[in-house]
Image 1 (tube, one colour):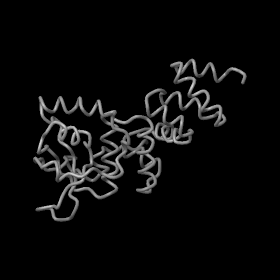
Image 2 (cartoon, rainbow, N blue to C red; image 1 turned 90 degrees about the vertical axis):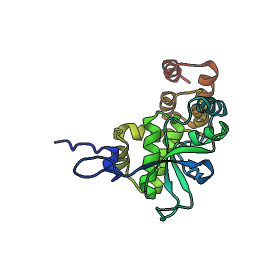
Image 3 (cartoon, rainbow, N blue to C red; image 1 turned 60 degrees about the horizontal axis):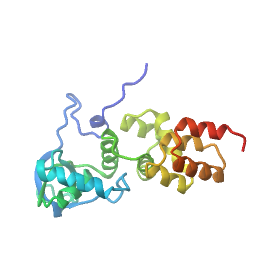
Image 4 (cartoon, helix red, strand yellow; image 1 turned 90 degrees about the horizontal axis):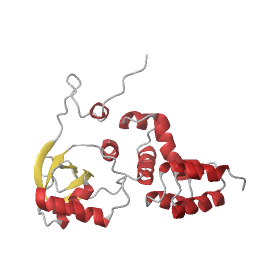
Length: 225
């Protein structure tokens, strides 16, 4: 019998065993200067134009979705500051919009749960490019000493999907850059994995310049070199 996959709340121990109801989390407004970005966020790239667009929306509607934070120290009554677990772009956009406070949800998370929460939130929002996602996976595996199976269970992904994403990190840096920029997709990258390094870069640059589809890249790879 296949074991039932845990919910994220259960895996992070944020839920009561009997009801599964999340009890940790206090919503409040905090000054923007009390929040600090997390050093090892999965996202590495931030589009300035997208940030400005978010700021425009915030000027009109405010910050609709609260930013998830955790206290920087153990003093729960009056912490010295808060680390952003999820929502750094919203925090940056709010500052661009001229806001002095932002809505937050305070979670009391250890380092391991913080890393998982941050990664899972970005995945749920489809908020990472493939290379940021791959680096986020690798960060959890290396820093938190998770196995790929444990990571897959924690974020609600298939183990094969996790492995496929991690394989992209074996591509040359130039190919990773093209995927990160959106010139190639993860599927393009997967097709290139079995080739020699020089060939990977050559075909990746041609595929990006000529806007090849995945099928066209597959056809070009099949040609005798």
